[in-house]
Image 1: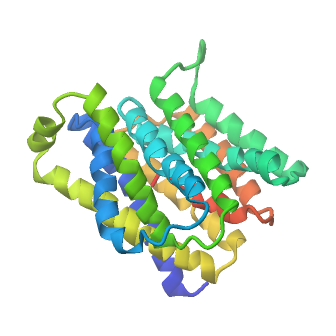
Image 2: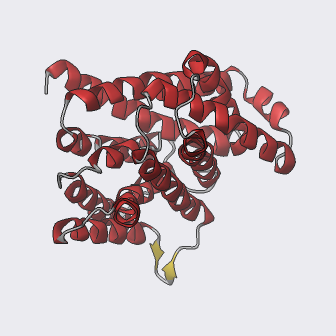
Amino acid sequence: MALRDFVILVLICLVWAANNIVSKIVVAHWDVPPLFYAAVRFMLVALCTLPWLLPAPRPTWRLVLVALLMGGGNFALLFIGLKTASPSAAAIVSQLGVPITTVLSMLMLGERVRWRRGLGIALTLAGAMTVMWHGAGLEMSSGLWLVAAAALAGSLGAVMMKQMDGVRPLQFQAWVGFTSIWPLAAVSAFIEQDQIPLALAAGWPFVGAVAFSALVVSVLAHTFYYGLIQRYEATLISPLTLMTPLATIAMGVLITHDHFDARMAIGATLALVGVLIIALRPNHVAPLLMAIRNRSQ
């Protein structure tokens, strides 16, 4: 990989990690309702990518469903989860998206999994369970369960997208933004309260957070990322994107003062090693394993 492209990939991972921290601050520290925050973010994404919305790829119903799963559904669950979950724990649990994608690809795409990728799945699950485990058993943290549900939604959308052809990155971003606004805004209006006053109370920092999340993360970082995917092999790019959860953990400890102990360290190590094993196995679903990183993003 050229040094310039490697630096770009490092910056992309740092941007994605920073977005996890920013999202935590917005929904937990500033108390901005998470669904409202997600709706505003996707409204800005939709406005910026509107020229790429049409003509709609076929079948349109599948694109709408994929966009909802990887956009509104994924981020709604993630942002609500971040109300109570720390960015560090969320970054580890969200790695469940990689083995979930592999399992779904077996069921929906006929992908075959050999023992090494099976080991990777087991290690990732063990790592996530370690993070969620307390002395009496699994910690029934609604936040982390919602993060896991977000990973499931993103994985299902990624596998369904594999069954579509000819969708360009900016066109997909346009459909993610356009289809996500309406259900997020409607549900926010129905179940959340004081959205506008709380956003106004947060002031210009909230505007900056939305602009960063929509423009820098969704439009800019993802566009550069898809360009790297097109130039380099998936087995090279995918392991390097593990910088995102590692950077999220580091930023979480430094900025939001996340609790990080030996149990978290063991869980993170198991999960990331498992993801690395899965990602290094060449197969036709490899780009999906990277697409769902976002994950979190």
